[in-house]
Structures are given as C-alpha cells and as structure tokens.
Amino acid sequence: MEEKLVAVMINETGFEYDIHSLVKAFYPDCDVKVFVEGEKAYSSTEGLPDVSITFSEDAILLGIVAVGEEKNTSAFQGMKVKLLPGMARPEVKNALKQLIYTALTRHTGKELPWGTLTGIRPTKIPMQMLEEGKTEEEILSYMQETYYVSDEKGKLSLEIAKREKELLSTLHYKDGYSLYVGIPFCPTTCLYCSFTSYPIVSWKKRMEEYLTALEKEIDFTAEAYKDKILDTVYIGGGTPTTLEAPELDRLLGYLKEKLDFSHVSEFTVEAGRADSITREKLEVLKKWGVTRISVNPQTMHDETLKIIGRQHTVEQAKEAYRLAREVGFTNINMDLILGLPGEGEAEVASTIEQVKELAPDSLTVHSLAIKRASRLHQWIEEHGISALNNTDKTMEIAAKGAADMNMVPYYLYRQKNMSGNFENVGYATEGNFGIYNILIMEEKQTIVALGAGSITKRVYGDGRIERCDNVKDVGLYIEKIDEMIERKKSLLCD
Ligand code: SF4
Image 1 (cartoon, rainbow, N blue to C red):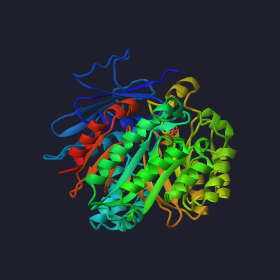
Image 2: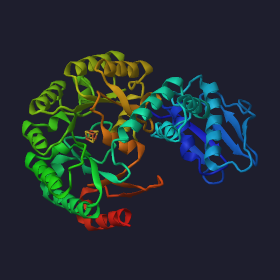
Image 3: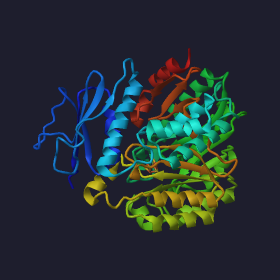
C-alpha cells in the first residue's frame, strides 16, 4: 500500500524537523517530506508542493495548502506572519509553527490536542514556569496562546509538573545521580519495538562477557562518583529478566557490593515480559532489595498478543503478576498500549477491567508509536493504518480506570508518530510514583547509563546537558568497553 506524499517546500534551512513533525501530526497516514529550495529537488509529476513556505526579510509567507485536493495556488495565498527585527530563532520557529498549525487546522478541520508542541517533553514548559514563580493561570494561558495546547492537555501537563516538582524536591537531584543499567535482550521482538533489543537465544553464550563488561562500567562509576549520592537505580532494556536467575544474582550482587545504596530511594527492575518471569528470578530481585518492578501485559487480549509477537498469553501475564505479589513486591507497575492492531474502545475497556481486578500500584498508558525501525512499519504497509486506532475515548477509558484504582497522573511524555497524536502517561497510587521516570523526562539529574545502547546524560548546574552513548551492537560493546569507559570519563570527570 503506497503512502500519499505530502510535500512541503521551504526556502530556509533549520526548521525541517519541526515542520515534518507538525505536518505529520495532521496527516499520519501520509509520507511527509520537507524540501529546502535549492538543496533537494522536489520532483513531482504534479509539479507543485502541497505546502510552500517562504521566508522574506520581514515575514513568513504560506503559499499553498492543498493536501488531498486538486492543487490550488490561491488557497491560503497571503497567509503570513510578521517577523520582528531581532527576533530570536526559537521565536521565529514558534511563529512558523503557529502559521502552519492555523492553516492546516482550517484546511483539515482538525485540532491537535497538543497544538504546535511536537517535542517529547511538554511538561518541561510548565515545570520551568513553576520554577520561575509563574501562577497557574499564567502558565495555562501561555500554553494555550503560544502553543495552542487544548485546555485539557494544558491542565494535565500543569497537574503533572506540580506533582513532579514536589516529588523531586525530596531528592538530592542536583548533587546526586541516578544509574541506568541496560539489558538489551528479549525473548522475541515485539511488532512495535524500536528499542535496542536482541533475541536472547542469540546471546546466551556471550552473557558472561556482557556481564563482565557491565562490571567494568560499574567499577568505573563507583570510583568516578564515589563522593556523589546515588538516588535511584533502574535496570531496563530490553527485558532484564531474560537473564537467568544466577546471572541476575551476579549483576545485582555486584551493584550492591560496589555502589553505596544507602540513599537509594527507588530500585527498579523491568520484569516486563511475562515469558521471562519465574519465581526464582523474582526471589533474586527481592533478595537484593529491588523496590519496584514492572510486569507489562500491554493488552489483556490473546489475539492481539499474538499479532504483536509477545509469545505469552494474558493468563501468563496475570500469573506473573500474582507470583510477584506472592514473592512480596508491593510496588508493581503495569504497562499498557492503546491503539494496538484491531483494538478499539471495547478491547481497551475490557483490558482496563482486568487490570483493575489485579490492582497494580502504577499503570503506564502508552499510545502506540509507529517507528520506522520497527516491524510495525512493515505491518502497516501490508494491513493499512486503519486497524490502529487510538481516540479521545480510549484515552479517557484508561484515565478513568487509573482514577478508579486511586491513581493520579505523575509523568508524561510524547513520541514521534503516536497513534492519535496523544501522549504516554504514568499513573500511580500515592507513594508509588516512579521517580526515575520523572528524572529521565525532566532531565534534572545526571544519569549514568551502562550497557549496550545506553545514553549517559550529564546535567550541569546551569541546566546544560551533555550526552555520551554506548554503541548499540552488543559484540562491539563487549569489544570496545574500555573505549566506552574512557568516553564516560571525559564526560563525567572534570
Ligand atoms: S519487550 Fe520491549 S524491548 Fe523487548 S522487544 Fe518488546 S518492546 Fe522491544
């Protein structure tokens, strides 16, 4: 099935990414391409782009908007926004996005819940304004007037930013750090996966080497940050519980031996896939003081689980959850995805009812994101995008389910190409908020990340952020571990 092309032509560089994200949000079924005049030739048989953007000395002019109709150069001819002398680049970008948003809203009749915001961290805006001492009214008006964010999403992001600010105030987030350990292996690859994840069967024989490389990184961290307070630890992936119980025992034991856990307020391990969970593994996690785990059904429908390639059943997911309770975990998260193939309101409602019966301590509700690197992209080419539906109603069903379980929203992020252009929201009961999740979203604290494909972020006192990434390829990671550590050293040690 060939995607329709939406071609945007612009005579200025540097805005392609933002334009692409915004136009794609209006036309999720289309292939959006942004061409810069003189750099990339637009070769269409029709000869005219769908949207043309012209920067003049004192204005941005929108020439044509005619997607899906006979092209008509006079449509929206003359829509423009004035550029004031000395306008900073972010302001120009904002003016450009407002212009495109207004034109496409008129053209399609669609409004986007997040308005012109295309970034993944919308709560950063209210968070910063709260820190500057702005009132709630000022923040909401700013979100609406500057970014055209809906009243509902403005209030949601403000509510979350307030909660995040309160939760972070209990951490040493400026003088401390958090640790991420990546285990990039899974039992099988999910249809929508775009993470660094490799089938565990291919790497079982080299796990010893992988763990040895991780231990070298742990040694480095222990030495480099011996005077810093470790606030939270998160073992993610992939699926960390693809490691066998003795391997988990070795990794967790090494972490506890080398690092000072006395201030750690949250120690999370993503148990994730039910097909990787056993009592023995859960007992190892418990033994080493893991405080929070995730058991992720994604959906409570066996048919969908088959389509998305999870190779476990709903009953297995429920059983894994019960086992985790039996072993004594008191903070269990569940991840769900809305907009999965063939699922609509009825399926989401039934999933939520089944989750309510289990009563987890937190629930992370994702909107399906369509990533180019995932098999889902291929699936859409074969089956069309119409089987993927996320709507206001399904989002509401999930939000209501979370509220019924006495949960409140505490973190939020967006991804590119999300079904329905919505967001991912983390809900939790009081005292069971995932602090690491907030830290990663708000980028308030240095996160030292170990393992293949992980990204370390150093947050400086002035808010500046610098990153260094480990290679994704597991073989290369093992081979070049000393090089990875040297790069970390340059980033983390002054
Ligand atoms: S469990 Fe997560 S990391 Fe593993 S394949 Fe599925 S989506 Fe990817």
